[in-house]
Length: 121
Image 1: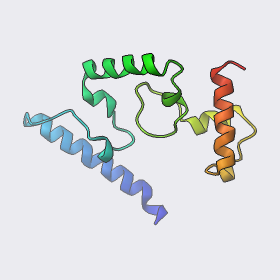
Image 2 (image 1 turned 60 degrees about the vertical axis):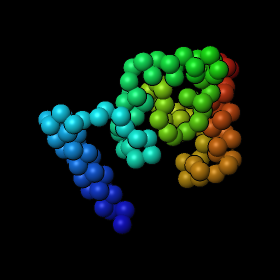
Image 3 (image 1 turned 90 degrees about the horizontal axis):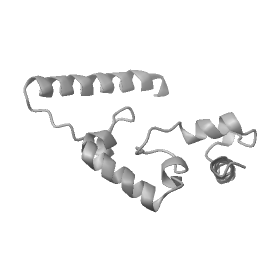
Image 4 (image 1 turned 90 degrees about the vertical axis):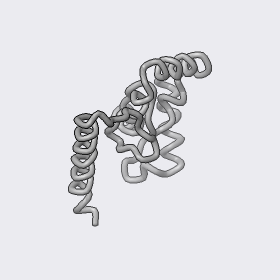
């Protein structure tokens, strides 16, 4: 039931916070967060440790200098904080139909909007 979504989300967040606080207080906390089980609000990439984050960012800069995978691919956990791509495209383009946001036509429009933004056109 969609009406219960916020209750479920807030209860889950509270549970995660309580478990983390408990494990910290008992000296058993492990900061690593498994991506597949993470909440969208958790900082998965940061849980890998700063040395690993720096390495991942360096690899990303070298092999994806325009940051296409960080900016164009929607969803997931990113190496750098980014605005939601759909929100960005809706705010900057009248070509996106909010009622059909998951359609392939809208995805193409989002991609074109984004590429135009990245290339400065």
